[in-house]
Length: 132
Image (cartoon, rainbow, N blue to C red; front, side, top):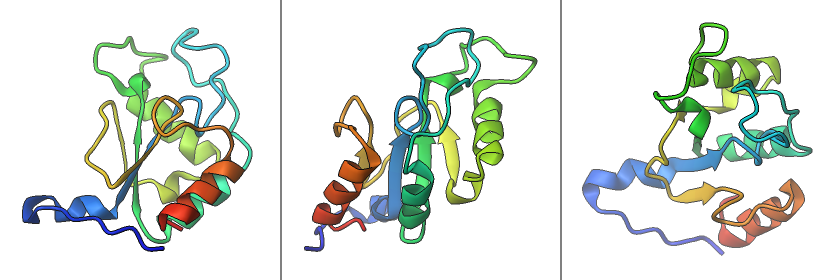
């Protein structure tokens, strides 16, 4: 079933965006804030699912790590740290933007909103909603 999304003309680009939380969804943030670094590993299935989503949509990652009021870590801000982590894990090519705020999007994947349990369940939910 294809999801019918109706956007006003000034927001038409939104229908091509899927916004994905970084912490606890793409990477394991089991220590919470800790020391501001990105210490977690990529969660199982994340890379494959991001690749599939990126084949049809622009991916924007949102994370509190990118907030401007957070301290620098080794001279880098949160956005730089996230891009570094994405590159290190071979998934930066699927991501259009990293931001501290939830962007306008047609779908949000967030462990604190659309409840994330696993990429297997997320893939099924995305398929049922017509996003994959």
